[in-house]
Amino acid sequence: MHHFNDIYPFSAIVGQEQMKKALILNAINPRIGGVLIKGEKGTAKSTAARALAHLLPDRLVVEGCTFGCDPHDKNGLCLDCQKRASDLKTKMAPMRVIELPISATEDKVVGSLDIEHALKKGEKKFEPGILAQAHRNILYVDEVNLLNDHIVDVLLDAAAMGMNFIEREGVSYVHPAAFILIGTMNPEEGELRPQLLDRFGLCVDIEGIHDAETRVEVIRRRQKYDDAPEEFIPAWDAAEQELRDRIVRAQKLLPTVNVSDEMLRMIAQICIDMAVDGHRADITMMKTAATIAAYNGCDAVRPQDVKEAAALVLSHRMRRRPFSEQQMDKAKMEQSIQKSQGAKAAAAGDHQHTHTHNHQH
Image (cartoon, rainbow, N blue to C red; front, top):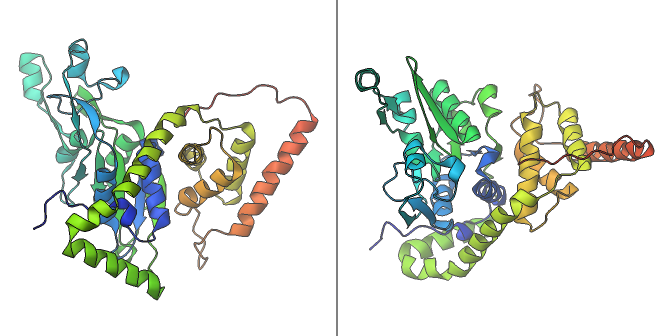
């Protein structure tokens, strides 16, 4: 007999290291802006989203709040909680996976404002949408490439800003919407427009597993899980707890992680050499590298963090050249890193770089 809480453990997912890492980094720092997972049907995409929700610790919410506000985050409270800020009852709640149906209308996603009510009563009446449910949860969008472009835009806006702003005929309403965005698509069913691709923080391709031994392990674990979840799931408890603790530690460490000018120069150089348009890639790469450092328990970004970030941040942002391999050129990346370090040596020669910046995440 399966219970709805029989969730396949995140730690038990075989391989797919890049996908798991991208999900973990977004869990530590949702400001990275989500992850797009590309892969054929029947790959562990939705399993991974549910497993991630189950992996993350329960969190404190304001009881009775539509958005499940964080009572300690005074700046991030919704309008109702702001009014009652001195008297907020709280409880613990698990993270949820909110799924966005492909048929969802814009009103369903962002919520709707009752204009008539506002005009007659002089107060705002807001019907919450999917973005309201998603606050502090995971928003899972399967086959994001089949959604209406405008809705994808709205989702990505909210994911980047951590809030949902809705305006109808001069009446506006804003509420917190800080969620972990997980989008998936099957590349065989058409691409996402480059403007939208660029706005997903990270992108990973699910590797098909072509090694017999690994495939056997996938089947073996799935079989054990299906036959006896009550044995299989507890067997992974220790691994799950260890990962959960590591994520929580990284969240605490993240605000203190330093990104030096040298590392920023390296990031900029890589983005220039990889012919990436706009500055979103640079900024996302900085956030991602800092989050990787925090995950590794370091309070400063190192070259290997930048390299790892580049693989997650740049694959979907490269200008497409006809017939070119979409794989990132490792040798070229090494050259960019050498170049940025050469620039540093040159800069050290003249003493004009005395000012340092405090980098926000």
